[in-house]
Image (cartoon, rainbow, N blue to C red; front, side, top):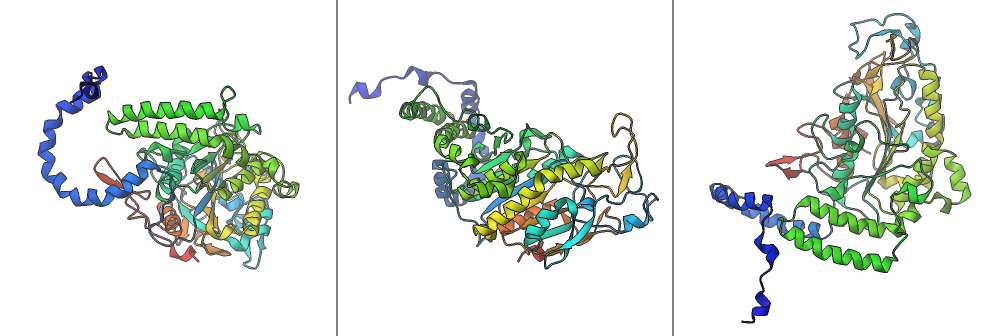
Length: 489
C-alpha cells in the first residue's frame, strides 16, 4: 500500500455544526427503517430521472401526454383591470346609473355607492362578434377570433397581496412555487444559454416582489429571472451580463476551478439544493453573455416590426418577449403597471385609458406577429390581473381616493381573463358575471380551475403533476381545480 495515496486531509477532521447534528442524530433513522424499505421500489424508479435532472435540471423533458402548447407568455395587468370597462359589457349599469343596484347589498372591501356605467364604448369585433371596449380596440381588431374570453373568473379575497400570489403561485399565504417555475420544472428549457423562466417588470418590483416568480420548495434553478425592462442598455437590462475585466477563456478557467471546489463542498453537505442552484447559476450567467445580448436587443428587428409594436416600454418588452419565446425560453411573464398599476380607485376613465394606450398596440402586434411566424398555435398567451373591479362607484375615503366619485374598488367575486393560441377555443366567450358584473354567475372559473386547464393544454394532469416536499406531494392547484374543457379546442 502506498502511504502517499492515503494521506490525511486535515479538513476531513472537522465537522460543521450541521454535520455534527446530522451524524449525532443518525440513530433515530433506524426507527423509520421499515417505512424507508417500503419506499425502496419507488425510489429506484425515480433514480434515473433524478440523476439526469441533477446533471442538467433545465434539459428538455416530455410532458405527461401530448400537449397543445409548449410555451407560455403571461401578460399580467398588475392592480386589477376593470372587467366592466374592458371585456365584459354591462348595459344594466346604464339603466341604474347613479342609483343603487337592485338585490342584496354588495360585499365589497370598502364602501361603494351607486351603479357606475362604463365611460368606455363597447362594440362587436371579428366574425365571432365578441364585444370589447374601445380601450382594447386594436387587440380586438387584430385577434378577437383567436381569443377565448373567460368572463366568469373568481378568486378568494379582494386584497392585492394574496390575490397576486394566488394567481401566480396557486396559494395566497404560504410559500409555493410560481406557475412559471412549475412549468420549467416539468418541461425544462429549449435554450440552455438563457433562463427557462423570465419575468419582465419595468421600473422595479410589483407588490410581493420576487415571490411572484419564486421557485418555493422547487430547486432554485427554476426560479424566474427578473429583468427590469425599463432599461434599454443591455448592460443595465441584464445586470452584470458582461465581464469587462477578463476574456471569456479566463472566465471559463476560473469557473472550472470554482466548480471543482464547489463539487467537493457540496459532496460534504449531502448535495444541498441551495448550493446546487448556486453552482448552476454561475454556469448560466457565463452562458448568457452571448445569447442574452442578442435576445434583448430589439434593434436587430426590422424597422417594420418595431413599428408594428409601436413606441414605449410596453411595446419593447412585448417584442422582447416574442424574441425570448422564439429562442426557446419556456415561460415569459410581462408585467404592466408595476409603478402605476391598474388599481383605479379614482379617475378610472383617465387612468385606464392611459394604461390601455401603453399596451393595446403592443398586444395586438404580439398576436399578429406570433400568428405570422406560425408560433401562436403552440404558444399560450394569457391576459389578466389578480382580480376585477366593482360595478359600483367607490365612495370617498380621506387620504385614499381623494374624495372623487369616479373610481372602482377591488372585486374578486367576478372578473375577466382571456387566453389565445396554444389550443384554446378562439372567438369564444366562456361563462358570465351577473347582470351588473359583480359576481361570476354562469360557469364560474376559479383560479385553481384556470391553472388546471392551462396545465392540461401544456400536457400535464394537474392532479398527478406533483413534487414531494416535507413528506407531502404538492401541486400547483393544491387540493382543488377542475379542467375547463369547454375552452379547449
